[in-house]
Image (cartoon, rainbow, N blue to C red):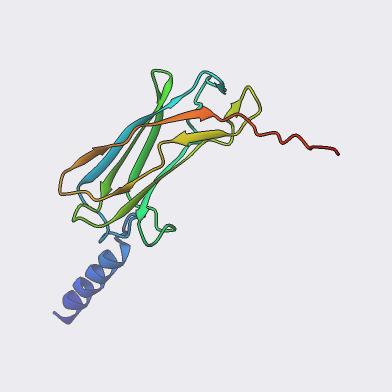
Length: 149
C-alpha cells in the first residue's frame, strides 16, 4: 500500500513540475486583443516577399517595457502589414503598444522611415479588442547649409 502511495505522490509531483507557463507569465494573461494594420507609403520599400517579417509590434506593461505580453502574429495582407496580439491582460491594467519599423525598410530619398501616429497607452476590458492602425512614411532628410562668412 505504501508503494502505491509513494508512486502516486511521485507521479503527481512530476506532472506538476512538467507543466509550463507561456512567455506572458501565466498570471499576466487575459482576454484582451490589439489588432491593426500598418500601411507603407509609396516611397518605403522593399514591398516584396514577407516584407513585414522584421516589423516589431509588442505590448508591455506601462511600467515594465522589457516584459513582452501576449501572443503576437504579424503577416503581409493586401500590400500592408497586419498584426494581432491576443491573450493580453484585460482587467484595466495600463499597457504600452510599441511599433518599430523593419530594419530592411528604406526610403527612396535616403530618409529614415517613421511611424505615425505615436502609440498611445491601452487599457483593455474583458474580451475587448482594440484597433490601432499606423502608417510608415519617409521624412525629408534635414540638411543644414553652413553659412560661410
